[in-house]
Image (cartoon, rainbow over the protein chains, first blue to last red):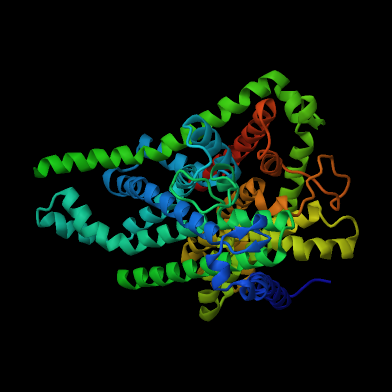
Length: 278
Length: 281
């Protein structure tokens, strides 16, 4: 039996819609399930108490602080390098051998698994540079990891600035630096910030790389040289070693809420950036 | 002064732009310097194809882990690629405007969910489901493939969609004008034309699956043995590092770096291949 074109059209349409609905369904299911189980655990005490008896009881305050510090550090380190590379690629060169090597490196970095970043961060920052398991080692490792994301999103934002902006600026006898710092950068800022926000999300969600570089210490960090256990790592230990399913769900729910927030903010920015471009 | 600023800014941007090259070089050097001596000691063939992994006895063969990584990754591709490609066609061709404004952020969110959360969800739902439906311990290749299949969706969907949307409009219009149905146009004209992008998407998805650690650590069972069926537990290259790095030292630690080298080389080959395919045009 051979299908008529109309029949195959119908079947294909059904299959494709089914695949799309399946993905949306799965995503909602994972998120709603974690939130339903985890949100009731979250209260003021959970957010402000330090973990007690390995996290069996108590809250996750020290993990929240640790996650925050590692993330802020990683972002602060990556910003000049990522955005600088993007400006160099977009404004200062027209594809040559060097830019090809830079692009190849960035794309390769994007593909390296986080566990390999963890191995590298451990041997380079923790051991070789003697920084030990610390917020500094974790932040530096994450900065390496998110560098390609920041480069790519910033470059896209810079390239999205209409050429005419630059032409007008040059025609008013502005120099290249003046054009970039006063015309191109402000116009691309929303897009660049969007990339940074998505990178914040990656830092918060990362587990393997920070586990090997920031450590597993549960105490409240006092400086960037303190070891810490970020929320994602804490959640992993709680769940994997069966220490406390309840606190695991609470930590997971807080992670999901953060990721949701980050995505909402990033999307709002993108929509504004697009609207501005028109 | 103006000229000075001009020159300085150009140089600063140039110096900053070397960061990605230096980062890649540093990572490569330090991983290789710490793993290569052990591979040289054991011998490349014996290390990769050795069946025995017993760090306490100085036996370092990672073949069971290689098989683990390959099977779980293939399983993830079998599950994730068809669904992902269907979704990208959906986004590019079928989705009503309201649906695509929900769907795109949803895919981004799917990529943002921490891998440990996927692992946990797998442990709580997929493991018991596999155990009840198919038997076995539930911690298995199949379970890992399902979780990874979901996790590679964002990569497969977004890159395939971009390559479908990048096609010239005339392809579609020409096919429709010849009286082809919408599906015939997609199937016989658009997908073949977007093939290189879709292949790159699949390769990058496979790269993500091979490299994933935390999600599979929780659902694979982590047994160091060659699996006989997809319901057996396995250990992958990544989980081998993730599990043992916490307490390894000396030669054992070097062996984990050596495992990292194998992983690193595999990923670099896949990535270069994907970059080659997308640039060829």
